Length: 126
Image 1: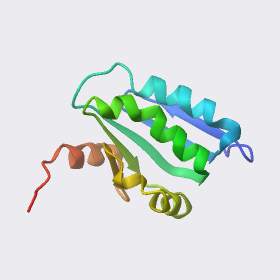
Image 2: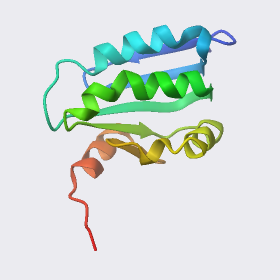
Image 3: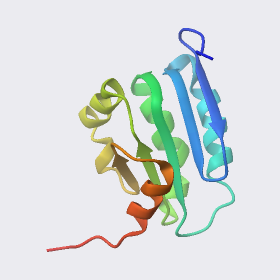
């Protein structure tokens, strides 16, 4: 089922939040509620996948809602994976340096299980 124009649909599971539609100032409260569910209970070493392949549009207010809604979760040592964003959403993320934010990982392909394994792998430093 396709979401209504200018609407957002959120599906929350134990370790993922799936966003479908358009995320803007008019509906950030829906996403903030979904993120509140997805980021609790709290604890260290958790990964939350935001499945974004159905998110067709995201404005600055939407990006801010995603970052602000996961800030406490990330500050506790947890990771948020931005999984398979559409090209338009990926572009705004890049323009706003979202992939550089602490605790954020951008994964362009694969599923949420693979993304969790990728995040769990130690990073190499040179």
